[in-house]
Length: 155
Image 1 (cartoon, rainbow, N blue to C red):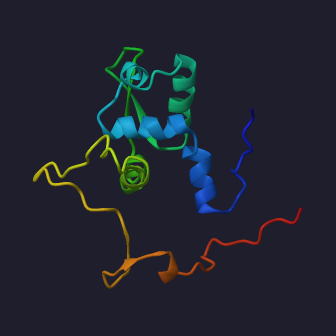
Image 2 (cartoon, rainbow, N blue to C red):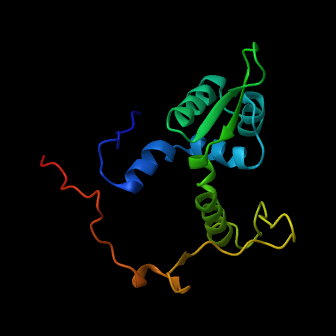
């Protein structure tokens, strides 16, 4: 099944989905946050075919989510690490985990606990915060055209 490309959609969510909307891409990012760096570490964790993993890693490198670095000079092996754009996905991945913990695993408890390394206390829920510190919900915001808005092309 071929996916419809969203690359021409002038929408941040569509572009996020274009780059990270594949389940393997998200799980690779998850594993990068938990310390995976080598192809074999990703392969062992995910259990996917090598060709699929290679394509997804290349995709994430091409889109600036991961950086690909030689293990050492003169060796044809590479390590992967999150770029600044990849590291900026931390609150997104934390929010997805928290959503799953609440809505999928509520009766069993979370499969993985995310805790503050210093205090070992659970992290607080990810929230959208107003400039004055209030936690905002969907009814507290409105969507307006931003500086990059353009009318969609007519069909």
